[in-house]
Length: 548
Image (cartoon, rainbow, N blue to C red; front, top):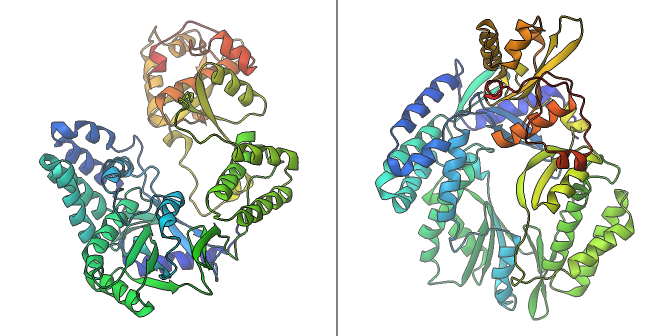
């Protein structure tokens, strides 16, 4: 957790707004943007019908917000501004377009997918000690992306993928890029330079721009130098017989081609060079690799005493051990990294025997493609409840299904103030509840779910009661003298898709005193496996009340 003076936080954020040439917008443009996107999607041709369908704006849209994270590992603790687009009008379109484009740009010869991919490419080059090591960074890549140029390059990609539909895809992308806006301190701004950190489409734009630079500039130098050039987003690894000045010339040529893109170059020092989480060392007749830890790194993981599920606590160690087995090229480097992992476990209160068992499993894991994949089907996630979540998970696993558990809110999430508070309950969607006063003086409740905002659903309930709808259990209750307390309606749960929303709603109904009838989603076997106790009173089932 980082505590920062609010005035300093606001000052640094406004500096970012000024540096990226953001323009003030007099009013919130969200509603007009929603209308423009819907009209544009209506003109989508039949081949893009499915894509247009998932590009529709969310049911309740809000303006993107800007917040900043403190880079505690860098000198001066600078801020990293991020624009959150969780409920932005364009969020679904950005996700869909990024997913649509990514497979077609992922196989570029200079693009790295992961550290493991880099090690696979570097392995045949470990004996080339006649070459020099360099690393380069793109300075502030996302804010430096030239949007008109990136939009033009994306049009070329669309033309390659779907020639007949390239125009509508380009129009949608251009519209998204032109309305790059956000809110901060009760004001609205439009970012006219670069792509926002936090947008699903920004990494795609960055990749297209960098691939175009590499394809344009590098071939001119390959006739004069041996160059092995690998890039992961904005981090570049270079192995070449060229001098430092020659590599700088290549980078300068890229900058002259696209002036917004600049670089910082770092040669090897004392035969060592760090790239991603790999430390490359020049030893005798070849290069060797080991895990790299930044000098300012402070490894923080979930402590053993945290109220989180066991898989969540141990996931970090599984990742650490996998890295210790794949990155180091010498046994002594592997041993050194394993000792470091055990020291982290001790600092966070984990039992040495338990961590040793994980290390044994990692070492003896079968790496073969001959074993058939019988992994359970993933069906959703539930909030973590000690004991209950484990029982549900084990029971579903035996049936061939898998669920993920979501940990409860921690202190940081409860007290953080860099993000605006969530919208009022009436403006949210999810599982809701409101109390009902019965004629005998007792109180019960009604539980429902909606994928729209709660205020709209409440209006529908009120109309159903006014119309004395005999098919609505809520209307039947009011006709019998019950009085719903509409003003006390509240959101009690969320879910990412309607199916999971129904399932969570069924569990809330089963465990709460309500007028609803239990859902058939919960059979007796599942209830026995979970240990959930029923406290509900039942009435006639109503299908209309379950309309989302």
